[in-house]
Image (cartoon, rainbow, N blue to C red; front, side, top):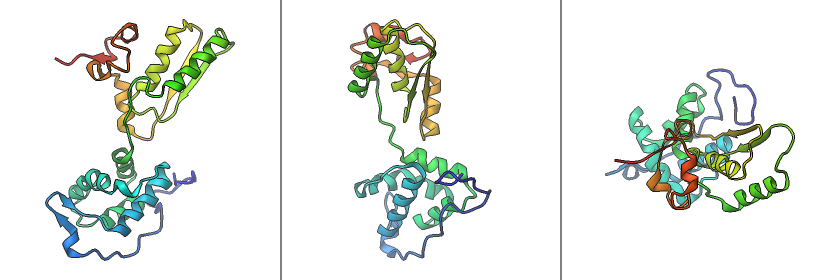
Length: 211
């Protein structure tokens, strides 16, 4: 499927090919890998915005080089332009997903946005027993801490009616971790309120204690 939602035939390019970009030879390599020219970075800014809606700021150039440099080494490419051509050719959808996974921000933790959960608590207080299924969509759920946090709030308010929590994310890698439900509790102690009653809501398969 193309960036605008239209069906795409296998092998059909995602976007027009990039123009030839001349990169000074001294800029191609450094001890940590291939460097990226300004025009090349612009191509990736446009591509990731169209594919995933991610606005990659100019300050993120080092991040892009760090994450995508390994893909260049994997294919033996000397420039980011060659990797860009591979992505937009339409012949490597798995590599496009790999690129999105590497550039998507997955920073999250339990109860990351307190105001969102305050709003949910207010809804539950006003409608403790609403008719039908109580459905919540956790968009950009990353590695799963947000949907699990939502489930904790529902449990805290004794909401025992039928409910569904739908979690989605652009990153397949993040969703795989969310499905596994494995978290190191020491890294989440503060957001879980000091490992109190909230932690007890998690099943043993949801959290793991290191050591």
